[in-house]
Image 1 (spheres, helix red, strand yellow):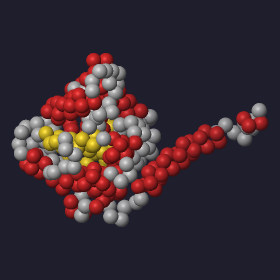
Image 2 (image 1 turned 180 degrees about the horizontal axis):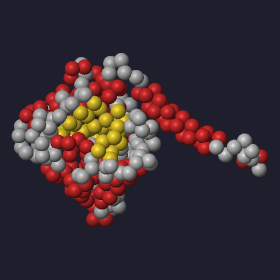
Image 3 (image 1 turned 180 degrees about the vertical axis):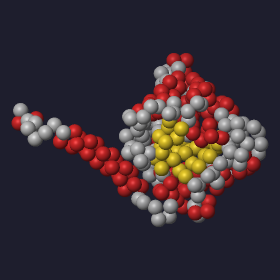
Image 4 (image 1 turned 60 degrees about the horizontal axis):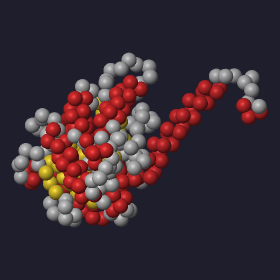
Amino acid sequence: MNFHRAKAAIYVPDQVSPKEAAARITHLGVGAHPDDLEIMAYHGIWSCYKQTDKWFGGVTCTSGAGSLRAGPYGEYRVDDVVALRRSEQEQAAERGQYGIMIHLDYPSSEVKAPDSVRLEEDLRLVLEATRPRVVYTHNLADKHQTHVGVSLAVLNVLRALPAERQPDVVYGCEAWRDLDWMPDEEKVVLDVSGYDQLANELLSVYQSQITSGKRYDRAVVGRRRANATFHQPYEIDRTSSLIFAMDLTPLIWQDGPDILEYVDGIIERFRQDVRQNLKEGMGSIGPDHEDHRTR
């Protein structure tokens, strides 16, 4: 795989050849920044952990140059930060036993650009070499523009592939926006119960973020636990850790829906659900209830 960026690199924790490493991948996570994989693609990581017939591959699209720097890293130069964040990502790949870890090294500005052709070309190389059955990326309602840029690039590449080379499923997962608001019948529920220890080990390697004041290690595990408790209001907890995702699979089909219309539809159904609950509640007050607008 010959990528566009001069400092793009491939890291294989168990030191098999990159070609062999890529060919064994069954679950692929494509994230924007170092640590995004461990936040949003964790279901794929633990699904493959210590398995011999399933392998997780990771792709980080940006260099992490714009990361927050404080505490012991406050005086780090940009090049130092990039090297540190790449090292942390590779430590996570080692601990999580990833089959391959790919750094594409793009600046966020290029990932966010609507015409990020080079990123799509690099992702095409990755997807053709790995041919995963499951793909994880950012959800399309994420509030981080770089995350959305990565998702759009992934979908554009997958949609252009022949059907026989497309993955079975594509998940858009939580990072800079939770997905608990989605209608229950539409959200994908990824159960990662019982694997908090591995999650903590992976997130703890990102000391550049933790000691700079972003406690992703606490927040991410806490969100998954909160999802498990608040997912069903009328049942006792049957899980302890959940990740929610959008099913992006229809968006890679040749005759699939328009991306904007697809996301608009999810948001509209959420709006209707909230509206219906309010209407039912207001109706239960009775016709004699004084209209607040006349007060």
